[in-house]
Image (tube, rainbow, N blue to C red; front, side, top):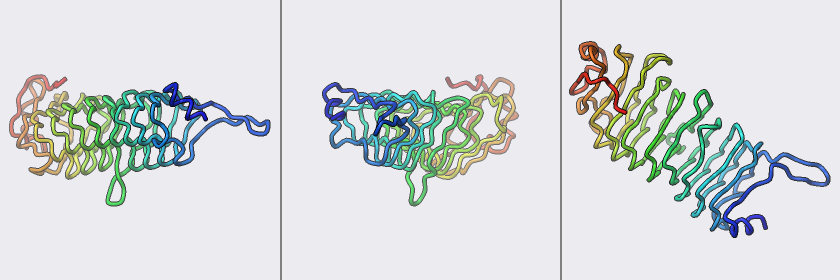
Length: 273
């Protein structure tokens, strides 16, 4: 009955508590297959309980009209196959919560921005032979802020046709294999000033596969930090790119392992955004 009413009002708000036989319980999670698209046509907004924390498999999927998900809690743990086929979803605020992503989550959704919480916690699924990753097939995504993320696991951020630039914060140390692939309009990568972190970053093999428009890499540090990668003509291939560095640092980068592999190094401030 609640779902039928929500289809008419376009808003599905779950209660923070439920009462059973005189006892009041907090609503802290959903079992699998509780909320998906078979009967959800017309629902544009979903409001989750404030103490909600666990999302069972196959929830928030195939909801053709869903535009906004509101969650005012602190931590959300997702099982596999959540947030799939939500083409109109425009609003979900990652920046205020800690989140653990299960296998195959945030697939084919309409979000324009993914911005994680600074000084927070974010756990991705480790994609691989028998697992799928996170954030695939997002046709409207134009902005990613990884905040304090130190590692993007394998098979994350795939097929983002509108994304034109990536900015990596100082905390990032490693990009997993086959991550950031099929970004057909990606034009630049910027490494922010590494005023914290370990002073190193590595790209695993097959990262940045099918990024045909990638031409420029910007570095804000005047002193080169450790940079390792698997050079592959079909993926990340520095010989094709121009490296932009701060004034007075060209010679340092031209002699540094990894950085010296770039096709061209220019001094122009090293800031791409």
